[in-house]
Every structure is written in structure tokens, then in C-alpha cells.
Image 1 (cartoon, rainbow, N blue to C red):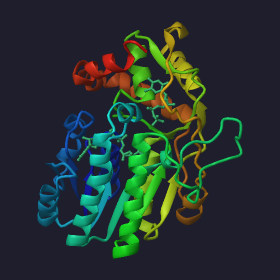
Image 2: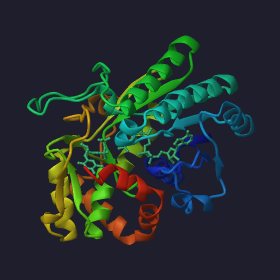
Image 3: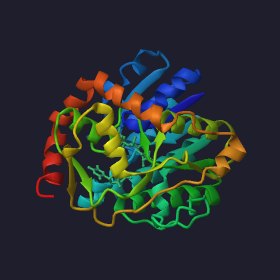
Image 4: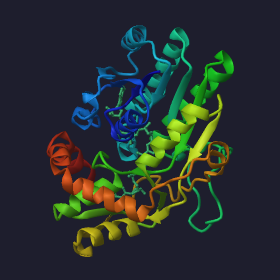
Length: 338
Ligand code: NAD
Ligand code: TYD
């Protein structure tokens, strides 16, 4: 089996490469443009496997993508490559459309041209928009209408529609997964959990947007990887699968929990101006993937968050290098007068 993993130098893609190396004997090619979010250091253990290779390639660069497909001839393509941060999409939407929409289209065209057994699109629960805070009975199912809020979610929803169109029009074998918020090792410290851990360790303020009451549905990254693997093995062509573990928490509770685990003072918590268009609540109904594929999350949040904090403590050089680089300028811009 020959597998292309796009965006494999990012958070979930790298965890997926490690997961697949552990559970299968595939030829894996990581295709990544190495944007600010891609880090080859993350993959240094994966590189020891002789069946692993890497190519630096922008998924929106048609000629380059076709060359990679021509050489490697993949059976399966899993597309993680994306601009993934909502706050950045609010600042500058253009690159989100370029990578997330045009990039996906180029990959779909390459899949048509060279033939594949499966194209899997890694999407997000954010395509469903948000749910009200006072209706805990409501969840996103696969038939919840798309109703996006941010340029990020709009670009991901557009990509999903293209994937479905290529299935219907060209019979391309595709699947789509829509997962809730992930956490775990190798997550770039601009997202809530790793940012709070890194700031806590550095005794820096913990910037909570608004009142911190927005709710996210957290899943340990390895459980997401396992779900995608199961979809590749047994998922039905043309289908969408929601992935989530019924673990909803308000942001402020996550931040307080991290502060407590690390043993710092809650005085570090600083309430800052809310995100524009901030989605209130995400909550996945995972009934379909459970019933059809038997997937269930294995890691409870209480254990996963401890493992994650320990990972950031044990791997300080990994994130300190990031925090000291270009990311610093981004951080100043996003938080200085907030
Ligand atoms: P990430 O930002 O950590 O990684 C993205 C990777 O894609 C990076 O390695 C980057 O270099 C690469 N990339 C960006 N533009 C590229 C381009 N034009 N060509 C090739 N590579 C490019 O993102 P992540 O959190 O690992 O998310 C991966 C995927 O999962 C995304 O599609 C995202 O929408 C989806 N997703 C993420 C979450 C989450 O909680 N992080 C939840 C659900 C779905
Ligand atoms: P984030 O990790 O950016 O994921 P998403 O917006 O895609 O769900 O943010 C998770 C939640 O945490 C979201 O409600 C915004 C909030 N948040 C903060 O309060 N402070 C921060 O510094 C960040 C990055 C996020």
C-alpha cells in the first residue's frame, strides 16, 4: 500500500504518520509545504523507517503535485494540509482559500489523473457553524447543514463540497471526516491548549477570549488518527463521518485545569477582547462512526491532558524553538493591544 499524507509535518498529520507506521507496513510519503506550522523536527523518528519519505510540495502547485503523483503512484491520499488557525483566517483569509480550496482541488485532479483507491479529506466540525450554549441537547450530525462562521471554516466547507462533487461527477472514491478539536503532542503553540501550557510554564499571561464560556468538544489526537485509519479500511465511498468523543468543556475550565495541573496561580488568567464571530459551542454526535465502524475514543480527557502537559514539559526545546521564531511576531500582533 502506498499512502500520501499531505500536511504530515503539522500537528495531526505527524501524529497520523506515527500511528500508521506503528499499525501498518505501508510506504508513506509525507507531502508538506513546510509553512510556519510545518516542522520537520517532528518527523525525525518517522524518518528512521525505510518505507517513509518526504517531499516539500505545496498542494496548490499543480505541476509539482502531478510530479509527485507520477513518481510515487499512491493508492491512498489523506489530505491534512491546510491553513488551520481561525484567528489567522480572520486577519488574512486569502491564503486559506488558496491552500484549503485550490489545494484540495489540485489534489482531487491529481487523484483523477493518476487513479487512486481512496482520497480522504480531513475536515472539521467547524463546517457546521455553532450551537447555542443553552441547548445541551443539540449535536452536530452528518446531516446538519453547513453554516460556516469564519474564513477558515468557510474554506474547509468549500473543500468538502468539492470533494463531494468529484465523487458525484467523476466517481472519485472519497471519504470525508469531520472531527472536533484535537489536543496532544506536536500541536503548534498558537492553539488554546498548547498556548496555555507554554505560557503557564513561562509565567506569561493566559489570554482567555471574552468570558471564556465558549465550549469545545476535545479529542485526544491519537483517537482521531485511529478513526481515520478505520475509515480508510472500512468506510464507505462518498460518505461523511463525524468524529468526537462527547467531551465538551468551556475554555475557562480548560485553562483553570491546566493552571492547576502545572501548579501555577489563576492570577495568570487574563480576559482579552473576544474573537470576531466567535463560535459558541461545538458538539459532535459520533453515533454513525460508532455504529458503522465500531470506533470509540480510548483516551479520557483527564488522562490525555496529563499526558499532553507532560509531553510539553519533556519536549521544551521543540516548542521553545517555535515560540522564539517568527511566531513571536505573530504573537505580538495578535495579543499586544487586545
Ligand atoms: P497544522 O496547522 O498543525 O498543520 C498543517 C500542515 O499543513 C503543516 O505541516 C503545514 O506546513 C502544511 N501546509 C499548509 N499549507 C500547505 C500547502 N499549501 N501545501 C502543503 N502543505 C501545507 O494543522 P492541524 O491542526 O494538524 O490540522 C490538520 C487538518 O485537520 C487540517 O485540515 C484541519 O482543518 C483539520 N482539523 C484540525 C483540528 C484541530 O483541532 N487541530 C480539528 C479538526 C480538523
Ligand atoms: P483554538 O485552539 O484556536 O481552536 P478553534 O477556534 O478552532 O476551536 O481555540 C479554542 C477555543 O479557545 C476557542 O473558543 C477560542 C479560545 N481561545 C482563547 O480563549 N484564547 C486563546 O489564546 C486562543 C488561541 C483560543
